[in-house]
Image 1: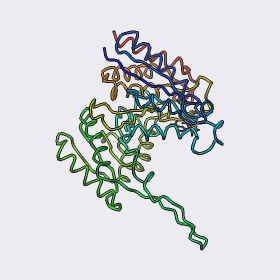
Image 2 (image 1 turned 120 degrees about the horizontal axis):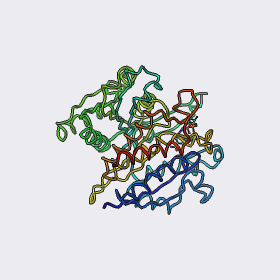
Image 3 (image 1 turned 45 degrees about the vertical axis):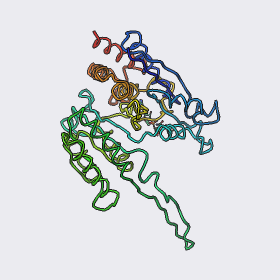
Image 4 (image 1 turned 60 degrees about the vertical axis):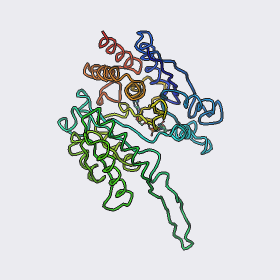
Amino acid sequence: MASYNLFLLPGDGIGPEVMKEVEAIIAWFNAQGIARFETDHGLVGGTAYDTHGQAISEADMAKAMASDAVLFGAVGGPKWEKVPYEVRPEAGLLRLRKDLGLFANLRPAICYPALADASSLKREVVEGLDILIVRELTGGVYFGEPKTITDLGNGQKRGIDTQVYETYEIERISRVAFELARTRRKKVSSAEKRNVMKTGVLWNEVVTRVHAAEYPDIQLEHVLADNCAMQLVRWPKQYDVIVTDNLFGDVLSDVAAMLTGSLGMLPSASLGAPDQKTGRRKSLYEPVHGSAPDIAGTGAANPIAMIASFGMALRYSLGLGEWADKLDQAIAAVLAKGIRTRDIAGGQPANATTTQMGAAILTELKALAV
Ligand code: NAD
């Protein structure tokens, strides 16, 4: 039986509450002998600052580096708003992304039939939606130099951000997109602004070359990023995998996210380069939402985003895609039965707490296992 090391970083606010529901599922996998998951826990964000004076300790960084997958809850909250910038809660997540070399951010947007009416778009536009946005995460305008604000001395200032991409960065992110498309509906849409940006011209050129040389079985289309935003709200089902840069990916993945309803439903994965010897990628799985201090401790948090993030770990890091499918089916079944935390109750009172939602999903999973 395969054995895997999972490093759990629950973090702050609702992070530990939603992580507990994943731990119950992990315990069940172990008890059933489906896999052997060794779990270890660390501190990140505000709780790490309170204990170590850092957003993540060196010891926990070392454990994250050595793990098969990191499961991350959420960080931040009003308690830590005034801590020094270098040790603010988010610094822990940024350090993990940087040191693990997590250049590919995967955000699926799936619309469960039972939640189609929770979308701001019409049911027929979103029902059955299943798209995947692959965003470049470590390059582009968020990191490019120079990045400055200069006082021009005449009452004016000049702000500069630099959008910069090199060939290897575009090659590796497009390969991730093409590989993932192979496991799905075999279509990649590459979004950039080649009409006005040099990085867009290079992006288009490199994606086209990688496709022709290595992935002729995949359908590739190029779309201008602004048109992509429009198409996402017009007819999102035309897409399968969308690959794009850091800035456009930030915006497009949020647009796609809202097609599906609540923040409490949205998982994500971040992947690094494959190890030269083992082929395994460093990886981190986390819900898209934050620490939700407004509902922390009330039992109102929806654990689905965290549970679905674990599902992505099963699929992309742990070689258990069949169980990832079953977990998705269990979530769909619970939703179809009308079980709702407050965020997905459509203005009605919730009929499930965090723990009850987690337990209901585990019950469905058990039923699917027999
Ligand atoms: P948030 O995502 O924490 O919450 C936004 C709204 O969505 C809140 O009303 C919250 O109650 C609700 N919500 C979020 N997740 C939910 C869930 N699972 N179930 C039910 N409702 C849910 O964003 P925010 O309020 O802007 O930020 C709160 C804190 O989280 C801040 O300190 C922020 O910096 C941090 N944050 C962290 C991350 C991260 O850890 N990756 C991401 C975003 C924000």
